[in-house]
Image 1 (spheres, rainbow, N blue to C red):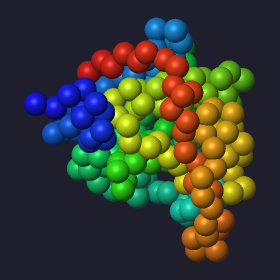
Image 2 (cartoon, helix red, strand yellow; image 1 turned 30 degrees about the vertical axis):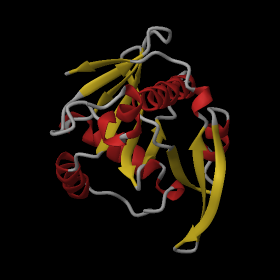
Image 3 (tube, helix red, strand yellow; image 1 turned 90 degrees about the horizontal axis):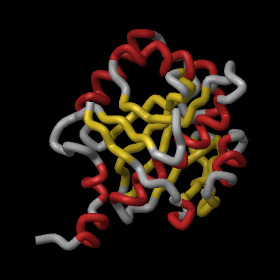
Image 4 (cartoon, helix red, strand yellow; image 1 turned 60 degrees about the horizontal axis):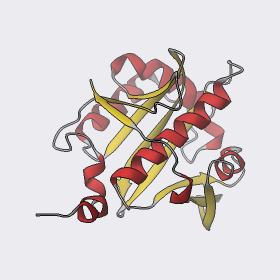
Length: 194
């Protein structure tokens, strides 16, 4: 029988119903109106629009077609260690955040915000805080993200409890590895299976 500490040391347990791709929602009682919900097919156009609008800020910088987005989604549905969440504020989809298990750490990816709404920065900040609080509560695995060095997300993430822990270059692009300071996890997170 595993103790509670053993449970938190196994990052695979941070996935609700880990044996299958389930849908769930994360929320925090102290952050009313903000929730993160796993994606389904109805979110594909939003994801593609966000990624294409910000493609110069990512390693893959080509335009994503509808067919390519569908192909990604089909693969995503088969990966048990990969989750993409829509961040919603007051019932308005404001962006997305993905997380996946890589090398015994949580890798945050595609942190994208729709820039059309004036409150979207606050909603995305709260969404990232909720997700990091959730991951910190269910696992001791590090929470990291690899971000192009010139991406404004680097500065924004540092204000959300992340610090640079490494740098590197891939395909002539400089990047920073950011890691979340678990002492900044401050929300009790509710998980609702959908």
